[in-house]
Structures are given as C-alpha cells and as structure tokens.
Length: 187
Image 1 (spheres, rainbow, N blue to C red):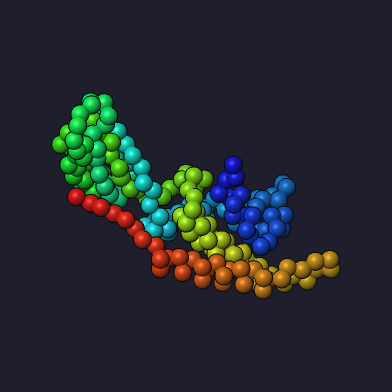
Image 2 (cartoon, rainbow, N blue to C red):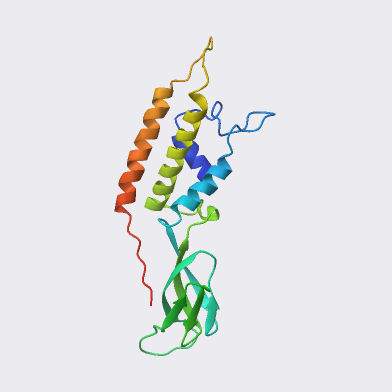
C-alpha cells in the first residue's frame, strides 16, 4: 500500500528526480518533506477529526492526547441483557477523562489527526489533507526556484505550470474548507 508521501508525489507536477523535496544521491533534500507534513497536520488538526473506540474498564477512563469529544458509551457485550445498553458518560476536556456510570463499556470519541494517521485515512479527509499539503509544497518550491536563474543548455523548468498547479490546489482546498462539517456531540 502506498504511503502518504507516495500519494503526494503521484500528483505533484515536478518529477521526483528534480524536485527540491527529495534527496539526491549523496546529498540532502533542499527542503524537508517530513517537517512540512508535520506542519500541515498541525494546521488541519481542527478540521480533520478521527473517530475511535476504546474499552473502558472503570468509572474513570483516560483518553488519548488530542481528544476533542467523547460522544457516547455503550455497555460491552460481556453481560447479556435486554434493553438499552447506552451508558451516561461525562467528558472532562481539561484532564481528558471520561466518567462512566456503568462499566465495562465501549467509548466512542473523536481526536485530532496525527502524522501516524496519514497512511490510514481515506475519502474526503485524505483529499483534504493531500490538497493542502500539495498547495504548500508547490508554494515552497516556487519560493526556492523563482529567485534562481534557470539558464541551462539542455532543459528548463516551466514555473508557470507549477504556479497554475499551486493556484488550483489552493482554490480546491478553500472550496473544501467551506464545506467541512465537524460532528461533535458532547454531554
């Protein structure tokens, strides 16, 4: 399966061999792609939320770093019984603790996206993060290449293609940002 970086360079208009983002044999990359990806994740963290589930085995359950909300809790299937299995849960955002009335239960919570999630996201969330990252990549590469005079005998980089790519990605990102819906349900 392709990594997030592979997915970026499939769409990037400058070939991998001459881009500033990847290291050349025996040399470092001009710009560090990993730092850009970390920055992008920090910038879109409030827009892209990951929904996860966790088994709570006590009245107080510590939720992971970056948790925004704890939506619901449902008694686990350990004890068979009829009726409603929903459990009252109260979430304290300052301490990231969920307080349950009955347990064991399965908690459903939302947290901010992390760099480690990039290889596992899909759909609109992947398109959103990838579009923003490609826009920032093109913007940074243009900032490096524009001041350089590219007078070479056997080749030339057409920066207008990269500029159009950057503008298209920026417009698409801003269109998607206006349509993002964040579903949070907090007790």
